[in-house]
Image (cartoon, rainbow, N blue to C red; front, side, top):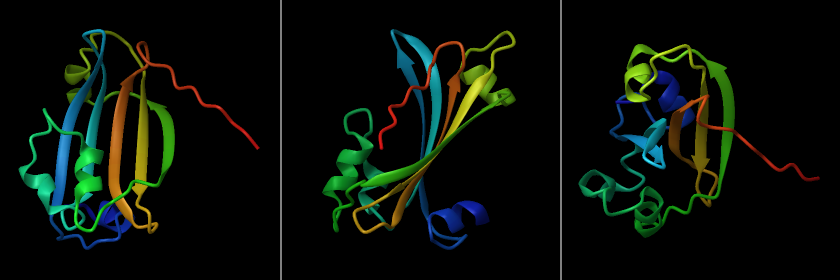
Length: 133
């Protein structure tokens, strides 16, 4: 069930059914990130029965009825201390900063379909971006 803030961002009600997925992201067998995805189940009911060890999240969204084409996302990054749970998941034993990213993804009709929060190990991840006019 979404919090009031999550429901507001996803333009749904606080009691709506959500699909939630938590995963660890690896690079060369080292954990670099913890990711928590939340999507209104009404967007793609098939999410609930999908084996994500074999399918990609966006693949399932593109096959939904009606199709959900992730079109753009609002993305923010900030440095912060890890939570106790993140320390364990990210295998952090010393003073390591994390980068916390929040992404709100919109479909082809500018409707929010996914809220994701990622926690990246600051010592194993660098954020890079290209900026154009």
